[in-house]
Every structure is written in structure tokens, then in C-alpha cells.
Length: 114
Length: 107
Image 1 (tube, each protein chain N blue to C red):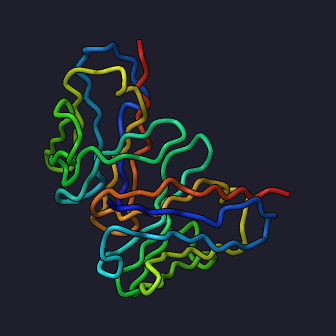
Image 2: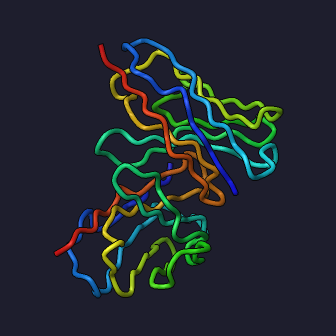
């Protein structure tokens, strides 16, 4: 059974940083691109970033480019999202997903507030 | 960037009704489109992939179709558990883009 389990969400002040993690199981993690998608409270879904199975190339939404960094550790079956220079508008549930087959985790909440 | 224009933004319908939700892409995306259902507090669940293929385990009352850059999700006979928000997602090119969502409510 495929599982994606996110962690790392927290309440953080504007300008702060977090590292989100997503542990994958049930498939050969290193073979597949993985993505982060977010959803602000009461809003729609927004694609954030994707990384290939090997770790390169990577892709980012304009809204996060230069502030967020996606990475992966295939030896640990783990996907990461380093989020820096956080803004109030980054408040959202962050999901990791294997978009190509529709596998999604349950999400981790990031709240940016003073 | 590819824009996905989804309509309607909300829809009231009754159990047993047939409903249709549409996404129009701003340029060609082949069949690189999925339809998702999301219920409050839950992760999105994919219903349709490759524009018209039914995800395993999804009831056959859900179907997808495509005509050029217009994509349609149809629910043939609404059930109580189908009241939710629906999104399309294009994954043809980066940035991936979602439709704005359709909230399906009970009439």
C-alpha cells in the first residue's frame, strides 16, 4: 500500500523558516518525480514544486521561487521542502504528492503569523 | 503558463441528478489532465486520469471526456457522498495548474 506521510508544519513568524518532510512507502521512491501542492485556508489548490526521481531537474511556482527549495533523499525515501522568508500568504496545508498516479499525503499545516 | 478555466464555480443539485463540470485549457495539453474530488479537511482524491480514464476503485457514475482544450467531468447520478469540491489539474507542462474548483452542494 502506498503511503505518503508529511511532517514539519508549525506556527512560524513572518520571515521565518521551516523544513517540511514527506516519507514515502509502498513504491520505488527513487523512480518517480514527486511534488508539493498547497492549499490556503478556504482556497483552492496550488502547485508549488516538483523534483525528478534523481533530484534534478526541479521546478517551482513563481510565487515561491527563490524562497523554497525542494529536495529528496532517496536512501531515506523522503521528500523535503525547505521554506524560507515565509509570508502570511504562505499559510496553507502542504501536501506531498505523486501527481502522475494521484497519490497524495494527508498534508501538514504551515501557519505564518506574528 | 497554461490557464485552466473551470466552470461553474458552484452548483446546486439533487440526489439522482446528472451534473457536468468543465475545464478549458488556454492551450493544448493533450490528455494530461486529472479530475479530483475534495471533501472538507481531507486530501484531494483523484477520480479521472488522462482526461477520461477512471481511477481504480472510483464508481462508474464518474466519467471524463475531452474535446480539444475542453475537458468535462460528468457524474451520471449524484449520490449523497458526491457533494464535495471538484478540481481539474493539468500536468502537461510546468507550472502545473489547477482549475479554480467547483463546489457541488445539495439543493
